Each structure stands twice: as C-alpha cells, then as structure tokens.
Image (cartoon, rainbow, N blue to C red; front, side, top):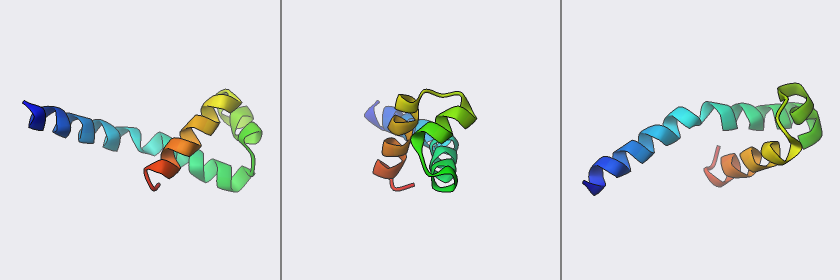
Length: 59
C-alpha cells in the first residue's frame, strides 16, 4: 500500500511542477516577488512560497 501512495505522491509532484517552474522563470525575468504577484494575480506571499518550494525541489 505504501508503494501506491509513494507513486501517487511522485505523480502529483510531476503534475504540479509547471506552476512552480513558471513562477521561478517569471521571478528571474521580472526580478521581484511583487512584480510576479502583479503579473499573476497571486499574493506576494504565495509567490514567495512557490519560489522557495521550487528551489527546494531543485527546479
């Protein structure tokens, strides 16, 4: 059963990678959390969370 959940977790992480990767790319292009937040209509706090999560995962 654990193998199933581990596989599911891996699959969900793969599906979720485009958004954090896109946020990282926007941050590199725009240079600040606030500019990314303005462009994406996310909060500045959420942008920061996504950037940190993406970097933690090595994206």
